[in-house]
Structure formats: structure tokens, C-alpha cells
Length: 488
Ligand code: GLU
Image 1 (cartoon, rainbow, N blue to C red):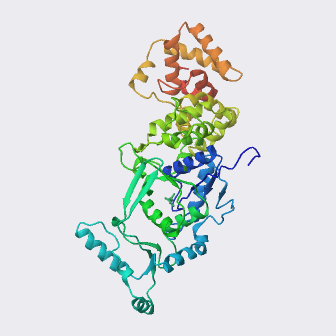
Image 2 (cartoon, rainbow, N blue to C red; image 1 turned 90 degrees about the vertical axis):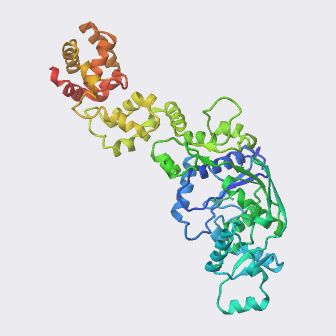
Image 3 (cartoon, rainbow, N blue to C red; image 1 turned 135 degrees about the vertical axis):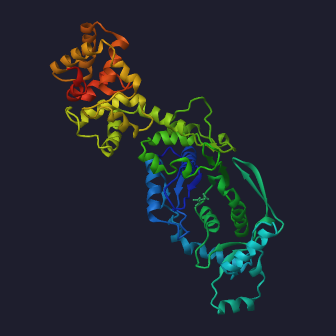
């Protein structure tokens, strides 16, 4: 932190469970927290909530961290960088939670529960069949000391349940949703420590947010229903809760919750499909937040300047893939050729399109390809399809309309002249091609569509595509001559 930057005391966190790759919703939560921290000269913390042992994987944690970095999000404290409240991985904090559990047990605010899975399931079914909300009805809360001992002797392992106070109204003044109230009747006593000694999310999150001095919890709306449980724990432990901001769900185009059915959901999939990180950040920021002005394209810096929680909408955000592609295209157009070349190479390699031209080498050819196609690209992956047009010595008209264009009577004469110019050329570059096309017009007394359309179809098979002064150097002499061989 530089000397003129005061620490505002604002502390926010992104606390993913490493049960899979970083997905779009998580990335948006991370982004909003990051931006909020930076805007308020606060601290941004990345904590791993890995207490679901069966579903947590180190690879997921690595993926989450690398996707965050790729997006340009960095953090002040976290699993990999440490910090004053380390460790930042919940499974490494088990001992930290212990005194809080003991306190709740000693004060009678929590109790051991010996119910088996089968007993709990039977209770659930019973409540469902009566049309009631399934919840724990508190069987073990009424056990006497002797009854507990008997169960211990049987070797039963106890989970620890929090005793939910009856007839209690909980109020969340959510920074996005406004005042939300919950009645405790609908909440059964809930487990805070599982029978294997591992704390559950709702418990660990409270202790950690409190110990890590988190001031604002900005997270997905799916956690709103967890908030009353967390508030009860804050209350029972005499801890001050943070402010809450629950950001709306992300829906697919059909207005159902965004899932794999709607296409890629992980950040890494977007990275692999040729999206630029700035584009994804820009797009994610618009999922639920709206900038104060008209401008829709802005970078992280502007986002940090403009972001505010009161412009975060309550209603769900709809994931519009066309808009993402459009935003991405605009970032592609703004990028340097150098950067795009670097990004293009893996797609061209994957498609097997490199080292197949008679050009001065791939590097030159790829930058030409980038310059020729950048206006047309929505993703960098699309460059492979654009490139394919220029590879190989054979070409067929794409449809009847294209085939008919080649039957025009001026075509053989024009193409013969073209072949001559190509044959005589020293090197086929963009500037040379521009001049050559003028020359061809003069020689054949053809202009405009009459000249360019048949030439385009003869060379590429298509009626649309990149400018001819790019297409011809991209094809190179060998392909140009081979593809026009029938008119020689
Ligand atoms: N571990 C939770 C999740 O991944 C985080 C919830 C929270 O931010 O409190 O959804």
C-alpha cells in the first residue's frame, strides 16, 4: 500500500468452495468484491471454504485462483499469499472453530445430536407428507445427561446442532435487496459440526468472517436463505455481523438458472474459447450492475471508479451470449496485432493450419491473418475458421450463386490476366496487391463488382470475406495459381 493510500477498514472476501472450476457466478461475486475493495481502499481476501471434504479438490482451488488471476483480479490476503488472519483454508482452521463450539455447548445454545441418517430421513418424509417444511424437530435437544451418556456408550458419534431460539424475527438490511425478514419457526435446529468433527459452511463462515474482520459480505442470492442461520450464530456468540449484499441470480436466455445446458459456465471454458479477460470482466460487471452512463465498454479502472452497490439490480441478470461476443469483438479490435497473434496461435495449431503456406513463414502470415480478420472476429477461436479459407490448393464455389458468378463471360480473360500478374510478382504483399488490383482493372477494363466478385469466388469459393488485398497475400502465389488453374 502506498503512503498516500489510507486503509479504510473495508474488508471483503471471495470465499469459494473448491468443488469445481471457477464459474461465471463465482467470478462475478469475486469481481464485485474486488472492485468494492479497490474503490474503498479496502482489502480483498480469498478464502477457501473447503469443509465439504468429499467435493473439494486441490485442482479446483488451483483453477479458481488461476482464473481469478487471468481476469486481472488480485487479492491482499488469501490461501496462497497468506496474511494476518492465516490460514485462509477452512480445513486448516478446525482448531480455530473449537472454542466457539465449546462456548455454545456450555451455554446450552448448542447440543450433541445422535440421530442417524435414517432417523432424520424418516422425520423429513413425515413432515413432507404432512405438507410441512422439512426441518429438524429437536429430538436430541431434549435428551437428559443419562440418555446422552447411553448413546455415547453405544459408540454413536454426535453432530453438534445449534438450538434455534423460538419465535424470533431476524432482520437483514441487505444493501441490494433492502429489508428482508425471516421467522425462526421455519428454521429447525441446524448442524454446525458434523459427526466427523468438521464444521459446516454456515458455522465456519460466521467465525471466519468475524475473525477476519470482514465488513461487507457480497455474495450470490442463493445464500440469502443462509443468512438468518448465520445471523443467529452471530447473535449467540455476541459477534457483530457484517453488512450483507446479495446479488441476483444469473439466468440463461430462457430465464432459468444458468447451468451447463446454456453453454459454458466456467471461466476457463471462456478463456479456452477465445474470450479476452477484459471482455469477460466488462460483461460480468453488467450482469446485475448498470453503469451510471450510457457507455457499455469499460475497463477495470473505470469499473472501480463507477461501481456502486446501489446500482446493483434486485431482479435476475440474464446471460446474453451475443452481447458477450459483441463485447469481446470490441476488445479484439482494440488489441494490438502482437497480442492477437499470440492468442491466435493455439487455435491455428489446434486446427492444424500452421506450416502449410508458401508464405515467408507463419509469423508473418499470422499477423496478416489477424489484420485481415480482426474486424470480423467475435472470439479468437473463430480465427481458425477464417484461416481455413486460405489453406490448400483446391476450392469449390460455396453455392449455386457463387458457381454462376464464375460463368460470367468476362471471367476467363480477367483471371488469365490475374494469373500473369501473380506469376510475375516478386513478393505478394498487401500493398503490392492493392496496386495489382488497380492494374488488373486497367488491363481488363473491368471495375467494382464485375472485377472483384468473380476473383473472390475463384480464389475463395465464397461471395463474402476479407478484403481481396488481404485474401490474395494470405493465399500466396501457389494457392492463387492452383485455385485458378482451370483458366490457365
Ligand atoms: N462457500 C460459499 C460458496 O462457495 C460462499 C458463500 C459466502 O460467500 O458466504 O458458495
